[in-house]
Amino acid sequence: MIKLQPVILSGGSGSRLWPLSREYYPKQLLSLSGDDSMLQGTAMRMAGLAGQDTHIKVLPALVICNEEHRFLVAEQLRLSGHDDSQIMLEPAGRNTAPAATLAALRAADEDDQTVLLIMPADHLIQNVETFQQSLLTAASLAKQGYMVTFGVVPAHAETGYGYIQQGPVIAAAKEAVYDIARFVEKPDQTTAEGYLASGDYLWNSGIFIVTAATWLAGIGRFQQAILTSCLDAYQQGQVDGDFFRLDAAAFAACPSNSIDYAVMEPLSEEAQSKTAVIPLSAGWSDVGAWSSLWDVLPHDEQGNLIQGDVLTEDTQDSMLIAESRLLATVGLENVIVIETADAILVADKGKAQDVRAIVNRLKAEGRTEHQIHRRVFRPWGSYEGVDAGERFQVKRISVQPGACLSLQMHHHRAEHWIVVTGTARVTRGEETFILSENESTYIPVGVRHRLENPGRLPLEIIEVQSGAYLGEDDIVRFEDDYGRG
Image (cartoon, rainbow, N blue to C red; front, side):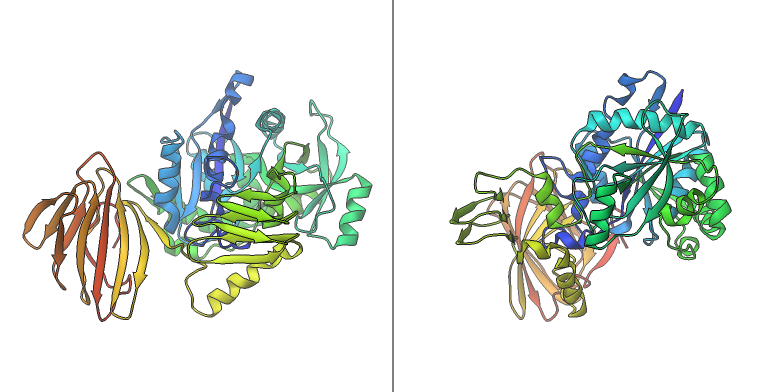
């Protein structure tokens, strides 16, 4: 029996997919292809696998994410039927090798022969059945002590991916599986064309299959500092509700490194090393930039990729995505136009990789558009900025059924609440009362207050803030169901 532990790495920011992807709501949480988010699609990728091979047992997924995304990740897993998933919180990003080490330590508590399937949360695989068939081969090799990865059969000469050069065929495998000759960095165009022509090179998918014991032995051999820091952070960590929190101080000492750099590259350079790559043709994409999304989504008769409320006239071979209003184009070709409530991107399609430069400028100028959307998600629901001036701010607040905001107080602002739909339970100072639709209340500066939704339908209110300072950091929490300070 093979125990298979899916490990989903959900720590990326997806800056090259700005303005849809933001730091606090990154691409893995977006529904870029179909109704499910990329995280949900990754979690559902194991569905039906055990039915193909009765000797395999798929364990609940382990998701490793950062603090800011924890409630969003938990909610998306719940909505996709993966309530049993474990969620581990990284205090800081340290790349994929420490994440794999933490997953191996967790699995080894039960059985160090558990096979880890380590997958980024922000990849797209269109042909899941083909992927699962290759995974069965990979899991069998992993049980024999191999470190296995998938190499994507290249569709074109791509300069945005790293490559893996195939070595000799591995006799222990049931299908075409190769020893890894070497990993190579992202090439220039001429080199990429040479790789494609040779037929010996595959795109590095970033998906790895290995037993917990094999990985711990490898990381201990090549990167002892990573193993030591991760072990300390794991052993000193603690359960916090639905999450497992690593010890922040111990994890801060952990070096940052990737799985391939840290272990697989040095191991593959040794004679008779147990590294393997399986060629994969399953509609894979890391959706790392707008050009990647262009490659995997359907186009209309004019060659346009269109999502949302879009009207075109004399427009060809363009990506046009509208989130919040009508987008109309006339006389355009080979452009990208992405419309959101607070930002619009217009770019030459050939410059899709350069969007990150805009994100870097937003950071340098101290702006917030790289971090949050106009609609900001919270564990209790969401809020959206409607209007703002020098001494006022208007928000639309949505509270999920049964949810409540923290018991809190503001030093610098007063608030007016008007119920639009649903029922609100309001705590204001020492009193608690119910507000229905079209009713309102006033929260003075310095008064403790709380907003709850006791009903079965979403609660929508309009909040009008007034005062000398309206920043989100003007909040003192006294009680909070979600453990926020």
